[in-house]
Image (cartoon, rainbow, N blue to C red; front, side, top):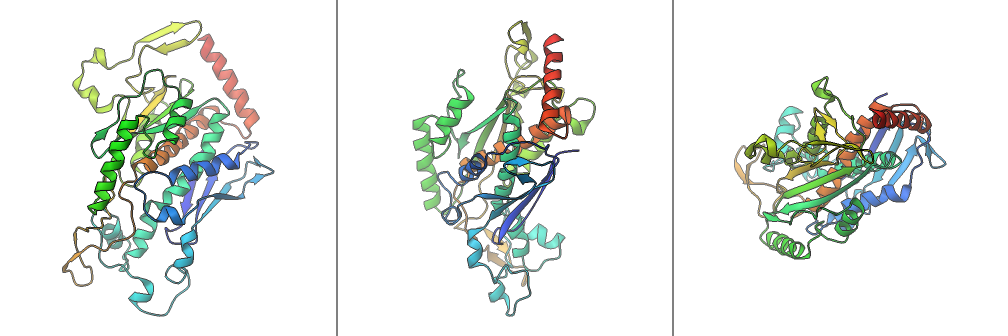
Length: 391
């Protein structure tokens, strides 16, 4: 069975819900580690007041018994604490009163799904669009990714992320010898998820200035996945190429507008001799690459080197000095309505990207080593790793 998930819920509704189908039985879940990923998503300099309201935790309401998956669909719920302030406005039952009682939105915000979604779904209250299109939904995706992360960890696969740039301020390249554990430790200690203290301070100052100006800024984040076997994904069909699937997942994150793998766009400016990774072999490491410019992929498949993927996040479009828009009732120019927002969510977006990337890796992992139980998957994995060593 293919690993998949669905999410449901609105930003001011009672909860976010996710259902995961295709997990094997006997996966032991660490609930503290799961909730730690949700807490990471709420951190970061530049976040708005919503993160002071919510204290995200995931409650598992199906598919797990006594700490282990049963093979049935796993259902996760993340409660919205802010719901208590919106119980009338967001109630599923009909309510009395006009636009004021419903807090109807009729002035679409540039850069959001408001107008396009309103036209597509014939909704004259744009709240019906913005409630679902809100980045609040990524809390459910992080919870789902946190489960996938634990599955992969049982096979020595690790994931880490960090911020590459914010508002044009670029962090120095990572040290060549930095390991995943050190990267995780150092980025967790930074409010903007960089390991360089001087860069961190410059980014904080820029975020504060941007917020004071009523504006917002974006940036670039990077995700690294290590411990991968050769051969996840496939070259035989376009939609089985794992790098393509990861790219799609990254740009599906709210406000993400670009993605690159390995050296990415820089490859366009280099000769082939400075792009492709030479193949080496030793008894100790087996087949491996002399470099990792292609970010762990060749032919849509993992080549055993770390996956390195970067995503570009645009500035959040909800501004406290709002842009011009058009009222859908009068079709007259108006200043776009303001919903509560962040000046910069790039550090949090780094956490979201980690978890959507790790989900795609887990999906490909189960396609390769699939089985109905962790024991069956382990046997398949061990057999393939022996095949790889003997090749």
